[in-house]
Each structure stands twice: as C-alpha cells, then as structure tokens.
Image 1: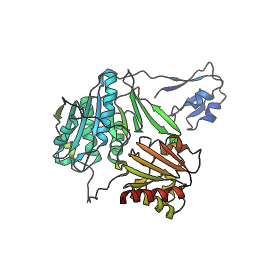
Image 2 (image 1 turned 45 degrees about the horizontal axis):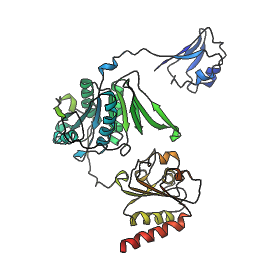
Image 3 (image 1 turned 90 degrees about the horizontal axis):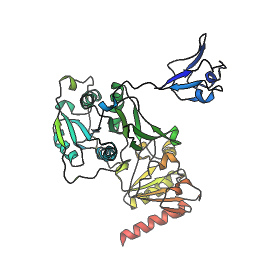
Image 4 (image 1 turned 60 degrees about the vertical axis):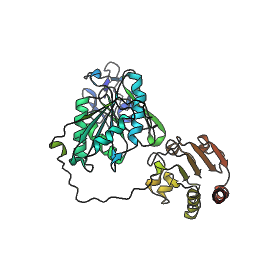
Length: 396
C-alpha cells in the first residue's frame, strides 16, 4: 500500500483530516499529525485538506516483476469431473495471455484419476497442467489443498492466479493470497491485462452501485476469483500441444489438521446457472399465490423459477435460486422477468442471457434497458395468457 505523507511546510494542523477520517487512523501528537495502522488509504483526508498538505508516496517495488510470468488456473473437480468454471477461466486467460505473450497453465489437485482429467484441459489450450494426485486428496480439505497449490505457485511463479468463485474456491483463494502476502479480488465480472502485466480486475462494489477497477501493482502473484457463467467458455483447439507434469506429493502435504467425521452424498440437482430457461420474479409479484402463477409458467417452459434478493429476504425463495450479486450469475437461453425493477445488483448477473423478456407495468422500469423484448402491461394478465399459450403449443 502507498504511504500517506504530510508536508510540514503546508500543514496548518487544522485537524479537518482527523475529523473526516472514517477509520480513526489520524491523531494529533506533539510532533504533528500521525498516521496509525488503521489507515486504509481511502484518500478522503487528501481531498479534505484545505492546504493540499497530504499526499500518497508510492512505495518502491521490492520485487522483480519479470520473475513472475504466465497465468495459472486452479482447476476444481466436482464428483470426479472438472468443474465447468475451469474452462471459462482458461478462455479468459487465453484472451489476456495473447496480449502479453504469456502461457496459460493449470494446476489440478485430487485423488486417483485426476491425471486423466488433466488430459481434458489440454484440448482447451492449456500449455502445461501440473497434477497433484494422491489418495490423501480424496475430499476437499482446505489445508491440504492450500499446501499443494502453494507448492505449485512457489515453483512456477505465475504472474496471475485465477480461481473459480465456488464454495471450494472461496475457501482456498484467501488462504493462498495470505501465504504469498499479495492481493485478492473476489467475484470479478471483467478481467483485462496491461502491457505492464498488471491485471485489471473489475467487480461491483458498494452494493453494486459502483464498478471498481482493482490492480495489484506492487506484489505478485495477482489473485482473482470469478463466478461460474460470468466468462465465455474456452473453445477447443485443433492441435493441442500442451504437456502434463506430475508433481511430487509429500506426506506433509496430505497430513491434514481437519478430520472428517462423516459425509453424505447429496443427489445432484440442476443448478440455476445450468438452466436454459428461467422465470425470475421480483417485488411486483406480491403473494405466494402469485409466485405459484409464475412457477407454472416456468414449469410449462421446462425451466426453473428464480428470485430477486428482496423476494428471498421476504421468504418467497432461497439463496440457491436467487439471481444477483449475493446470489447466482446466470446465462440462460431464455430469461423472463416478472415484476422485476432491474436494479444493477440483479442485472449485472443476468445480462449474458441470450434472450431477455421483461414484463412490468412501469414503462420507466430499469429492466427494460437490458431486455430484448419489453412487455409494458400487468403481469397478472400477461403471465396466465403466456402459460396457456405455451401449454397449447405443447399439445399441438
């Protein structure tokens, strides 16, 4: 982090910066104003100072940026197969790698059979796949997986590490970034890279009201997590030329401090992210009976019902069926919204849908700004008629 400095020649000790600091990071001492470790470099004091006496002094880079290169993708496995978010990360990394002449490498950790899955990654353009295969990796244990991934990062020294923002990835990523004393940006919606190899990581902030651009310029590697279905999936390459490297797994690496007492296999259900057809309901849908009306439309179309955050908070649905920053990101072939206003917290997680049909009685509703087809009408008239049309079409 850059250092906050005061120019003693300009500072009048007025104390306005102390009053404005939201973190209590500034105090008045005998020698002047002192910055403590609560400072978050928000810059509010810099903008507040009437004498322009406060400024940031950039710390000199103490690392060799050229010593860290290429992308490393952490590849998660789910029920013996590769989690599809890995292919999306490979696709995004390949786009960025072409700009700075980097390679796209992967690390995959798991029990016996993991090496076989590694071969699939080569078909999607991975240059090198590092495999950590051992019976001790059966079942995810955060400490063991972190040890193996850290071993790979230390050996390969990638410039950037991309991890899927799954339950597993959200547990692993902060452990790794802490070990390497570097930055992590969670739930990125857009990634890009500069000629300097600094990755531009864009994600919603302040409840989705701001799209923050984050860069980790003074340390390596750069860590970022990306939700499933946010990026485009990598395309297969015609002539795969990558290689698989089997990495040594030490006894210490699989010696976990976590003891699994019991586990139960839950029957896998089709997740919201995997659905081709979704009907999403917002606050314009007022009662449980009205929700069922929309559910009938979803079932007639062979899809699922989804909810906005206010609907989940009011008890109409659960988080697993919520679209939005605090829920899921979806990209169905067809998305019909019923009574959804279109707040950015919702729309930022569904604009990748192939066809969006919005039903709302308010002609000024924000949702119409992202919809392909806009129906300005009472959803209580439109939805039953639409359901009837779909059912009649099926019968024909």
